[in-house]
Length: 435
Image (cartoon, rainbow, N blue to C red; front, top):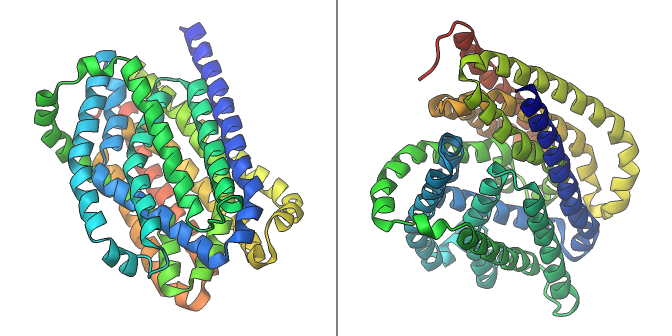
């Protein structure tokens, strides 16, 4: 048993490093091209791209009705055949939900361009946005299943291909076709189509089609939607907690403020890609399997999980303080002068993300026991806090208020998840096992 546990730990470290190196390459390509993008795009245009990203996330979440979250909750409890049946049912359910909604969005595109984007994007750009929205669910589903299958090498290659494809198509549009703003959503949507085709190839190669039963899938779809809808609301609340501040800035501030904030958020995203996503891909499947294999000793497993949380958070905060000062000249060199105000937002935004990262450790036990109500509540309070405080303070303090409010909201999120994690931990210590 100890040898197996040692091998599992080696696998976690190996996968984490692989995901981190891949994320470094992925973000490195984007950072290398960022000065070029920013010389072609104004801060206001960069802000519009940020709004497009948020629109895709919201619509994808809505038409996905929380199905990927449901997959994350159920996947580790099934054997290989049932996992394939679960995946097929989720795909069919999603298509039944997505196609009618996307058709309506396409039909009312003029009203959406006016009301959501303030006429800052063209009809052509909006069509690429819709294509991104359709493909996004399937790309993320592919990544999710590959992470649960510990296919770190193959997933890393797909991520690198994704980054190189976006960069190549964007540069071709910039230099050979003289296409500027629309080049970026076009490159993203076309690349997502390529990734989706890779997913279809893997689907056939892994013989998922042998477990495709439409009648059974349609019968289960209603139950899946019923179970996943609260998770969809939770995902939307998570977006409100993490990203709604840019929309609040667009409404209460200016698109220029959105562009500056989004630039700082890009460096914040570097931390997310190098630490949070690799940790999610390597650690969460491992800890959920540890819970499943040690149902009679979950308190012991969770104690180690919590200890790792405190060590990780403390280490990341120390690293942040050590690198932020030496990194300032490099960041100023990368950013054009019109974006330099973003520099002072990066460190506090990353600090808030570290608090958010710590909350993910607290959620592992709640996720294993499918405590969707608690997970929902833990997002609801900080999300409402985020919106209310931003609405109150952005008109007076602008971007500074947005950064401080995000730290406060992430702190609420951490405290709530910590409270319920401790409650669950104490139940296990008393051998009161949750249902």
